[in-house]
Image 1 (cartoon, rainbow, N blue to C red):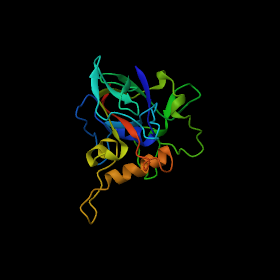
Image 2 (cartoon, one colour):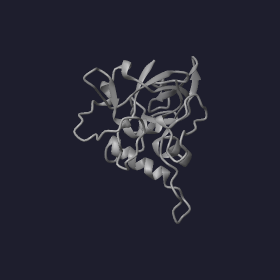
Image 3 (tube, one colour):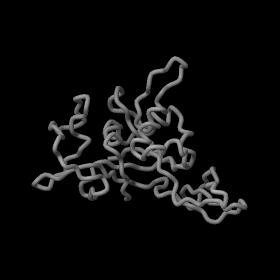
Length: 213
């Protein structure tokens, strides 16, 4: 079982996702659920002219997905497998803190800015020194996933349906009859990954997963 890191908002959406249900369904339909995540494709191979060379289509090899890394002449240099593949079981790392008795308390369970509660903890998070997700030990994990599908694409190829599957609420239509869910996702991507991260439009792994018990 492999660890995977999610932001606090991502964890909230996972908590609202029905376990053992595929395609994913929300527990509360008025709140977002989450069944996709994206990671920048690394390491990067670069052509001499600076272009990043990846064959866009994914293949199946040894029971899992992979992509080709190609050189400036279009020759395949090696196959590259994703960090997570179809069938992998994952445990979620999230921001937390331990009580004096060693029990984990999760940041996603605390009151958010709207005054809502996602679980049983009902304290004000002000002043709490939260431990970052990367420091969570396996024994503190409470959320588990199974990878159902993997593909590779450009970040900006995300669809409205994908943005909603990423944990973004379905947004109302604007005056041009276009949903804003993908725009909301783009803003969140920049907030997490830094200014210009969306605009750079990198190749990303797209993981689709089911929450499991």
